[in-house]
Image (cartoon, rainbow, N blue to C red; front, side, top):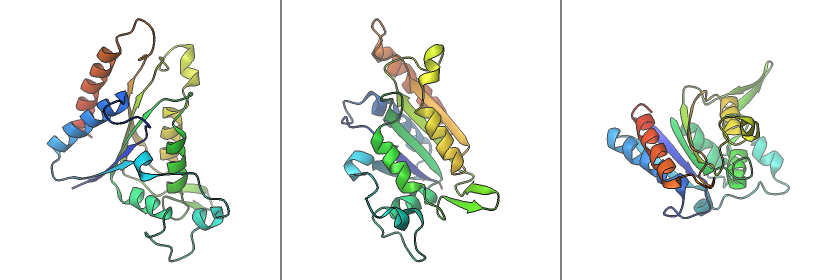
Amino acid sequence: MSKVLYIKANAREDGESRTFKISDSFMEEYKALNPNDEVITLDLYKEGISFLPVGQINEIHIPAPGTGKDHPIIKYAYQFLEADKYVIAEPFWNLSIPAILKAYIDYITISGITFKYTAEGAVGLCNGKKAVNIVSRGGDYESGPAAAFEMGDRYLRTILGFLGITDFQTIAANGLDIIGNDANAIVEEAILSAKEVAKNF
């Protein structure tokens, strides 16, 4: 049995979010195929994730021995570490990820929990896990000159790799706001892709 952490980062409600239409379809398919797995849904906006507090950076980034899962911020790093699989769902905003998702990453990237420093440098402690990133984009940032501006999925792939997670897939709905494109058809195509990926996730 696996533990799946479903991380949602969108200010829009579930019924309004094109990203969540795709990610929820992924999760429905996954749950149907893996009914015994534990799924934890973490909606970052509903959770009230905010920026790291002033004056507590050292306490959080270098937690004292004995700092446990009851700490209001460090508990998220333990929760992340304990999961086996990650499903991240977010829109592509201003060429990157929403700020709340970056704030969450600052919560979970903690030395001694999700990574450690060694004589050879930093080493991730989340090895053997897998992640899928589900993203919706107004433009097409997968090919051509615009691909150089894509810094959201690229960042997530890099930071999760830093934590030891190298099994990383992306499901993207591109060009949703380009005039002349059929946004509904693009979302439906992404849903089909999501269901296929879910079969082997």
